[in-house]
Length: 342
Image (cartoon, rainbow, N blue to C red):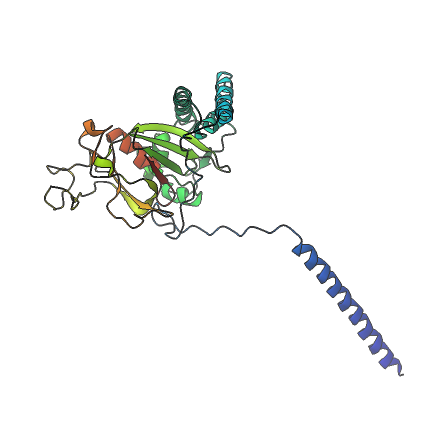
């Protein structure tokens, strides 16, 4: 064999050995990868639409807190132990730890009425101090400080930070009257949502809960009195705030079931029923709700505050001016759910 041919053969042999090694390494790496834990897919990017999310996005929330009708003795003892520990922590000024215990105790539905009321009262006070004040509490998952950059506006920050709460409540917390006057470098307090509502028809109440980021914990923040539909016409089920469903100064059209002439009645006109600011929150059913596509069902203000606490509406949920102002500023389109129970 010629000298040149020998070198060529040797080179080919070296290449073959290297290729075999590469194949063996690939096979070993592939087998190791197949035995590893599966990787969760990247979350689908959110597409902003005003204050709303991608219409294809489904509102997700932990199971709503519902009263346990027949709690066992063990469930009652466990709930009471959580409540007692929460009170003890609160008395020791360990606010966040107390909030967690009291929230967990309340959502079990196994507390007696007195303890449940005590948990709600304490959690509402904690919410005012931790969520709705201009201060933050160290270690709070729900709140954080954000420094505005050049070109930032509040609605943009809400979308980019995926806060899932309306900008209105953030402006109020930070005592900012005009969002256009926020300057670059200014630091503001933000909090993460979404906020969810649970309505009890029999108690004429709406309880508001905040989802704690990174957990499935539902933190009670406020109870409001409501009015509901006469003759049980407010449908039970699970709903969400419809995309584009939050309207201020809404024009009211009487439903076909009404005795009132069917014509559009704008805010400020005689007979207008939707309250001082005409706030309307349209709801759409989710899961197996038969009213998924219902267009005329929602939450609104009222010009008849005496009707709060009564079943006199045409089916919708009504709040007084103060209540609807708060709810309108907290519920976020496509993410906030409204659970209605008997």
